[in-house]
Length: 171
Image 1 (cartoon, rainbow, N blue to C red):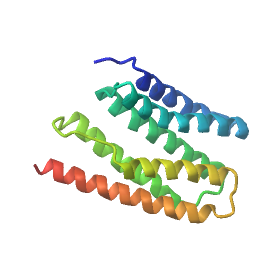
Image 2: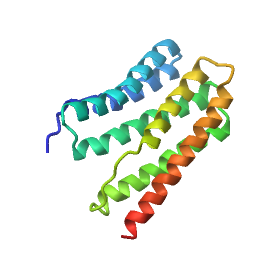
Image 3: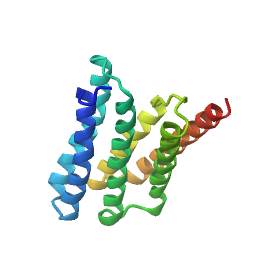
């Protein structure tokens, strides 16, 4: 198994960028924190693009990409809660990500015969989560509407993954 492929390196970089943007916000370097977050978010698109384009999809990539996404989003939500008056309802995003991550780890480590594939709804969820972070940081007027849409999309993706996982485990 090749570890140092272009997509895996990009995912590893996102894993490193996530705590960096968190620390930048923590120390109130919000502009730089936002820039690092945007780079990390863009890298989420890049790793998948290069994996398909260069035919470098790998088992490791299927593990670290979702992990990097969840880490990035979890730290973003923590920043929102700490500094941007993020409503408690928004924590449902973390709950959905935690459940899907636990299910993913179970599938990868306990029952390896099940193939995990990210759905387009899951990718859409990550995009909405990124947008939600941005609109709260810039204090966009309709940020609560966007948050509600993000929660609905997140829950829909979570339910879809749960149903898919239950069906796969019952085979």
